[in-house]
Image (cartoon, rainbow, N blue to C red; front, side, top):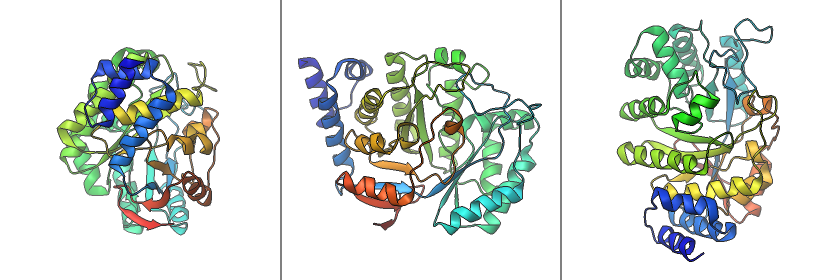
Length: 356
């Protein structure tokens, strides 16, 4: 207990925790002490007492994916009768609905489709920007970028620059899972390795794009591998400063080939708190109500999180794995306010758009 208390005091004082110290906290720190320390660090980052969220929509333009990750319940094979690709008009209609509700961000992600070429993506992006120039296109994860670059015979840099000129504003952190290749080879052997994921983010940052970082935990990784993931993100942020936020979310085992057990709320809160203490160069930590529900998301605001993520007018991937939490805008505002914070709508880059 003395060791964990000294580590927590160090973090609260602004010291950088080592990988070994992070592992001690994840494995043995008292949960309430851990939460209090993370909350103090959170308040140092955000002394105004504000909790932000973005009004957004996730659009999954296709469920066809050749990666066939063992943890995913959403993907379908190219020849599946359930396979689909949204038309451009369908995508634009979904964004029109988002804008009508005051939305500012669209997150467009799909599978690694073997037949969709660069023209599909640039045409989609140009159509979105022509009709909705004010909407932030926060879309296409690193695995999609690498897959498309390989298919087209482009470098990642050239591909990203082309997509950026067509209307891509920023990249989400999808496909990170755990940034350790032992884990990736077990749960997603056909997907990019951890260095490739980070390399896409480095190029995006060099091109002036901001990105988010994620962690999907609760599959086959060890506590040490979770902490290694955080350290690798921290080192990347030291290099570029291009990440706006970190989003840890828990694996959902239903309907997946991998199976397993769901992450309980206490384990989730512990991971949020350790993330806040380890990621001393990340301004924001998001609460994942999508996988844990609004009540646990609310509690996460006392364990280091300062952002409630998106309203997600639509979400399909996590829902396919059994999580069906829906939290409308007025409920998000109430949950934040009831937790003792000031709710505020933000942009993708965390500019405050309005307070409630």
